[in-house]
Image 1: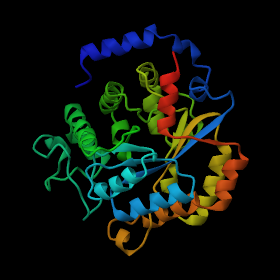
Image 2: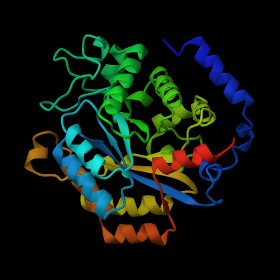
Image 3: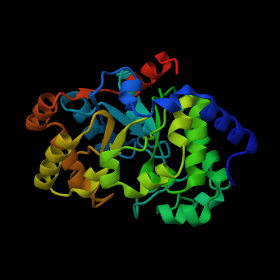
Image 4: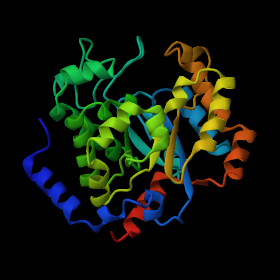
Length: 324
């Protein structure tokens, strides 16, 4: 089921009535107050709270490297440890990595709302389903919305600052109905959501499925007119670059390809090793993300390219200052 008629009508009115629709020739960076031609970037580390190694690797990348933003998986067991770090470091940018899947074989988690409340999201172990396709096939948009709200409520109850919302494994971007609920809740709560406009170069190159969904909707402008910032571009392609040598080469290429606008580059900075290898076979690529994000050559390249680093917190502050 899609959003209710009243919400759709309200969003349609916002889009039609807003003068910002005539401003689409500007990048969102310009609309947020940066000068024309500015390349504004967030290096964003996902999967906080999933495990100790992910927490420690991301802390390294925040304190010694390029990472400026993070997001937390609320159903996972190491959230309290990550929250302890956030409370000691309140300026850290932290969103919610809204989690609808539990994809590892033996290290798993269930829905925050409870399997009985969202049966379409739960498998026969009572855990979240192990793949995006399974969620699309079995869960309703109402169940997804209930789980999103439960994850937000848990974070708020714990006293966790929420700078934005995004989607683990892109599940909320894989269905128009799920995507609409995600944007709706972001507008309602005034939590920025990961969403990009229609001109993203890296997203077109690396994430054609996500880009196709965005191009088929007006949700980027609905989010903007609902008071939220919007990105010009985003890529999570780093996960596919396996070795440190490949990753460094591809990051150099990607950084040089960044176009003017606000861009998010998604990484998974993790201290690899025996314990993480018991969870997942992705330890080497995650360790390589950490190594690249703290590599002096890559840090210098970002400076040489004139890139401005930002956070979701700054994007929202700038959006609140914009009158359109």
